[in-house]
Length: 146
Image (cartoon, rainbow, N blue to C red; front, side, top):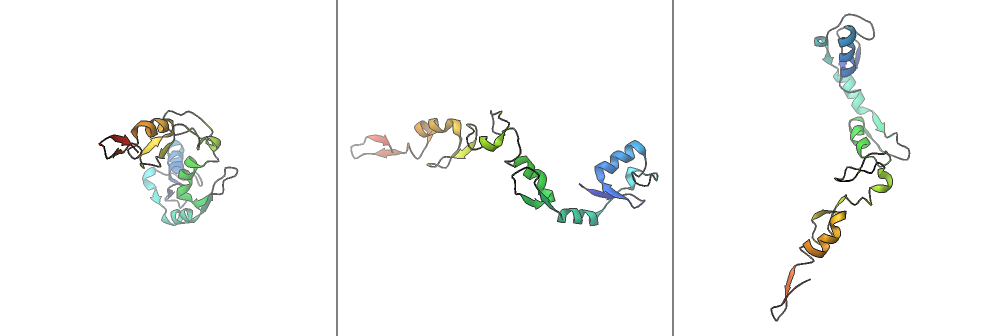
């Protein structure tokens, strides 16, 4: 339940659900007493109870447990739930096997600590990496890459 609220009649529920019910029926969904949205008050007791509930991920194979307020964020990143790849330029739908091999994933160059995409790794190492291509001067004045 997001944003628990209570009506003047004493019945409580989710604020967005109660708001919709009042908009359509102009009454409390439980007792049918006339109600208006201005009669809502936040229910801090129910809010605290909901916040204390331990949530679990319903995806098969996932062992995540956490606070209810973190469940939605977890679902967006859970590797056991099929999501479209969020890497720019990629359109793969199943992340379980894809995440570690996506050519559009970002990672840090092990030489210079610059963030690059996997698809640009070879170009970065061959041309752009400042640690690999750091100038090294020989005694004769010749400049070479390390």
